[in-house]
Image (tube, rainbow, N blue to C red; front, top):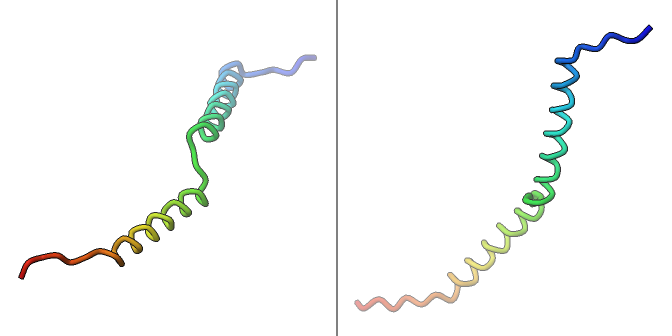
Length: 61
């Protein structure tokens, strides 16, 4: 005998698999890892610190 399949559940499961695959592709295409973001934040902080260290105070007074 054949196994009885609920078509509504099968359709929803297939849709969910397709959406998960699309989400994974978008993460690869558009996403950056946490390490990359952290590295960028550290580099920005370092750059700001270097600029602040050499900033001149030329206010008259």
